[in-house]
Length: 77
Image 1 (cartoon, rainbow, N blue to C red):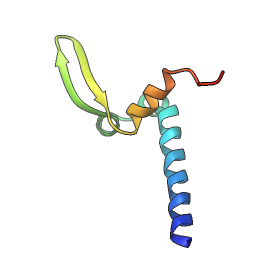
Image 2: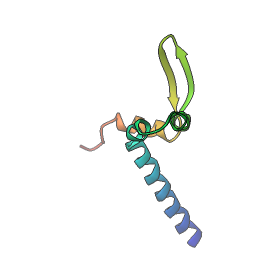
Image 3: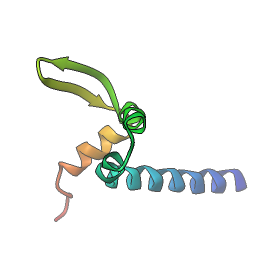
């Protein structure tokens, strides 16, 4: 029972950290040095390709789910 309680607590901590990171992504990026920006983008993005002057990419999990959820209205409203 304690193992499940601990796992549940860790899940909530991790989820909260990820959501706060997503919420502050622009602020973090703008205040970072070049190498930190590169690491931050690597953490968030995958499959980056330059198509002419346009950067195409996919968001890594769980940021892809957060972006998808943000674009949909809440059900029941």
